[in-house]
Length: 85
Image (spheres, rainbow, N blue to C red):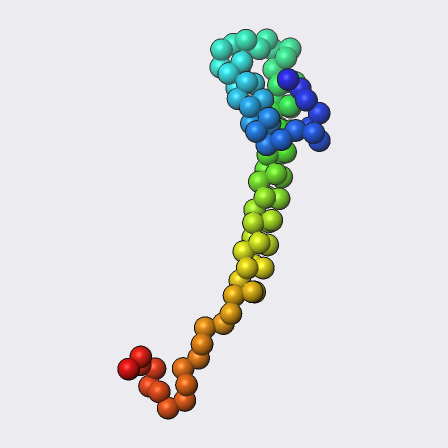
């Protein structure tokens, strides 16, 4: 596959990682290729981590914005003992 890292989606990166892992497990990678595969795997893992962090940050931001828009719970009126009846 060896697609340019900047243009890869998370799914593409994980699929390539799985392909590399299968090739290594099946001894389909000779010693000369092994270093390249390990280096590529390292780049793909880094890319996946960055994408996950970015997604987590975006999700946190959405929840933080949502929490800011939620009205504060009503305070009990003076004189009430905090009971409903």
